[in-house]
Amino acid sequence: MSDFEFFGGGDVAESYDPAAVERFKERIKQNAQFIAALQQQEKKQKGKDDALFQILLKWIKKNQNRGIMLLVAKLIEFNVPAGFILALLLLGNATRGGHGSFTAA
Image (cartoon, rainbow, N blue to C red):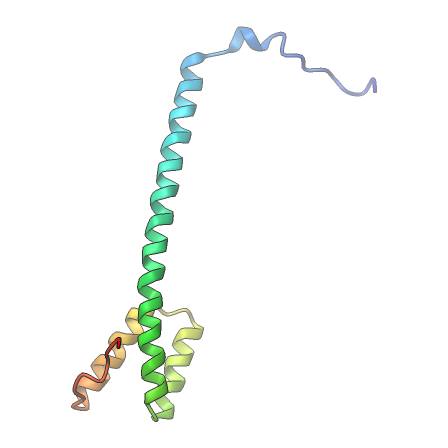
């Protein structure tokens, strides 16, 4: 055990800076608030994505157009946001003269 040095903290008291500790605590507090805000935003976004996914799922079950269903499946596979996929479907439906076939209910 002679290969290990003991750091008992004898010299630590001489270099202790209370202002640095307070700054460190403040940064930890700010980081915790930032993480909490990110988690809340993530939860909110997940709820929106889940709702859009349910709309897409209902539309896929109703739709018999195999090409569009394959496209939607590929877009989901590539992690394309559900809102973007839904917007594409709405635009495509509008150009074909569709009337409100996309509903959450």
